[in-house]
Image (cartoon, rainbow, N blue to C red; front, top):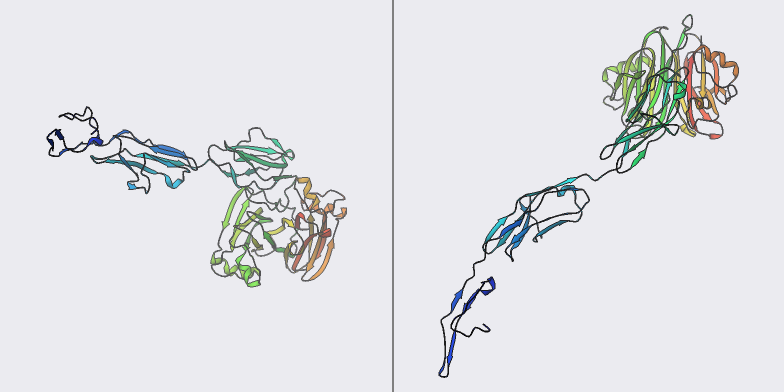
Length: 499
């Protein structure tokens, strides 16, 4: 030991490094002698936690760390997660570069030296969801409503924090329209237009699709096809003939390609009392006819005004005997097609929708007996494409004598109700089987009186809408709507009984 040259070796402040075996060598001119070894043992204090780890609340994706203070020097560390050792976590600091939701747990640390072990208090890590901008899960739907009737637009949105809503009409904000829904109790012509909503939170905002609201002086026989939301009112009743003719409308069918989140709507009007109607939305049931890509699981809903009166997802087997009675093809038992039977008195709207996309056949059959009560109009609106995507409506006349009908294909005439992207010049063709028996490109003003008699909304003189008055014997027919020059757009096909 340097400098230790006296008979006494002193330590003013013993440290752990002083521990060891000591001997003394005494020397004079005659020689030297070495003492017996003396062992110095330095006792190390047990570890003490001087600063406990603190609990943390962190947003997913953020950085955080736990730390501990301990004495004396030279201690070792082992961090625990829910009581189990974390591999490699052997320092005084436990860090998380990017916090994940799975990191949420209780953490503690074990401090050790040669004199003992001590465990810190537990500290919790709470992980909150990362801030998310709003996202729309349900878009507002197009609406057609008769003047004086109510309508409702609605959206559904997700996002963190408080969501704020602001509705706009024709690009201008609507005062007080700051909820997820916007309603008008009694629609007036000034309420027609293009509506959208902006949803915002502290992170950002999102703008919905534009929904068109049409305010008609009299409700069309069928509300427009839309993409969901509250159903528009169905058709207004027509003026019944003085005496029921020997024949009647007994069936309407629409085959269409359904886009994602689209709702197909057909309107029916019954006069003279209540009439049972069988309604079917067929997707899987089309497979035996070689139809590929049918809508997998359609659902049906019947509305009177805004009130849901009946709905069906997968059709009940007890309806099967009725299919044959009205001439409808059978459906496989247990298929995911939809069907229901409803008593109708007045006007109703029938909606069909399904998850995903695919081909849908929507059918309505008169299930009653005799000529009164009776269906007085049937119609539907859809987008007219080209080729197999034109608008095709099949209908049947039942009975023993001829029936006079007004058929219309309305494209430009919808623009007056605020409908966007209308079919500019529709052509209406009537077929009996494969034989074309009538056609019209631009309607004649002579038909205005017939439209007024059945309560159909008037067309602008000179418009390029199409219309026909025909007298047909009992049988099945097809009304086809296409655009001149393979043009596309929204169109409404209507079939009215004429007195």
